[in-house]
Length: 386
Image (tube, rainbow, N blue to C red; front, side):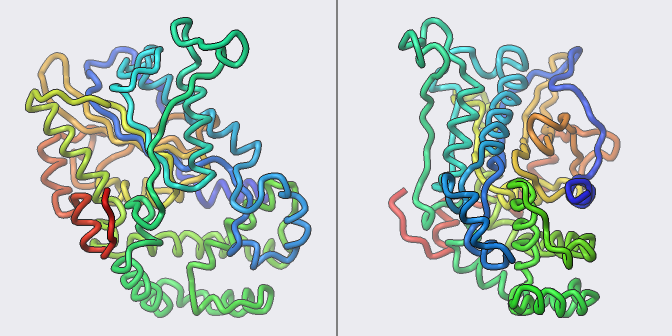
């Protein structure tokens, strides 16, 4: 029952389609792909809200806090299978069967769960062809693929933890939300205070922390507390409200997703101008907030924005019509790799009846959110040599 409620709260239904369109007139030129890591164990903040912290610690003695579980490893592998099927030789052909360094950029945040997710996804993406088999045992099934990860304190993908300006804006957002979107949940604030010993009015983001704890507990084979079952729909509502606080203002959206958007626009513009652009597929092994921020700055319709589950995949793709030469951008989403079908989303300020948006219009409607990487560091007062 809990799994069903989780699904109904967090997953929004869209029109489903195949991995690629068999009779598509479009040629894929570029893809920026952001995925959330696979299922993990609770983190320390979540564990502090648990009614069974010692039992959970015993169950996760192998993975530790925030560790990728075996279920999460399988999920990460499915992320790689999706990338292979859509962008590899059996899909649009941007990636070869062999691992070729000039075709792919792979970046991960400097967290164990995202780095392991990246490695597992690559194992699915590049099962070694004969020319790259380096051993008669492991070398026949595994091809090493490099990724980039920078320190958390310098990583624009971790904007919510390292950017002082974003943290200041979040403090304002939390204070305002208590008298606005969270105001109808006064009784729920009292209940969670009694049951967890924490005052959620000091930090409404704890609602998402609590809901993530419950998802982790269920994945570990544990039940959720009886008190929570009675108010689970309301807890789901407040968790989603807490998640939405990360994108409350345009400046928060820009700090969260502006760098990736800027890189996409730049790469797309170079391709259109006829410049040589390598690494036409760029993968980011990251977090739910990275998917959400890129959805926001690229203008994905609000009603098509879920709270990303473990193994969720969101991508911006650049296409060229073979018949007309028109250049368009398409947003796609997979709610849970290995379980969910690919979904074509819509940009709220673009063509109402098409998933595809003309590139010039897309560039114009997103220009306020473009954020060069160096400007991110300056705004956030981050000292870096990157």
